[in-house]
Image (cartoon, rainbow, N blue to C red):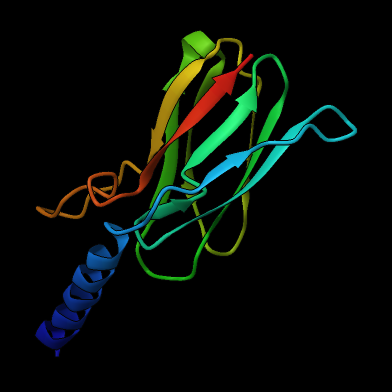
Length: 137
């Protein structure tokens, strides 16, 4: 029984990985709301982020509203650029969205990714679960 469950889980993981590596670039330019905040809804799941290229303005507050799709595979989102005022690592749950707040202080391109890895398989980032935050003047 245990071996059968393990085989099903492994089959699901491998199937999801095959589709995740094919995800195309989706670019979103954040608009500044009336309250002065740039809000960007994002979806995480199936080894992708949607959008996977997020463009925001420097020195304007940002809120990323990240929701995980249903599924058993755990995901997170991480971006480490403290020199630019951006430094977060959040575990994602399908039951609630994570609102990640920061104010970018430097223009540049900063990569974000899911840092999870299951045993000896490719990391989630290597399977396509990564993107970039472009901070523009």
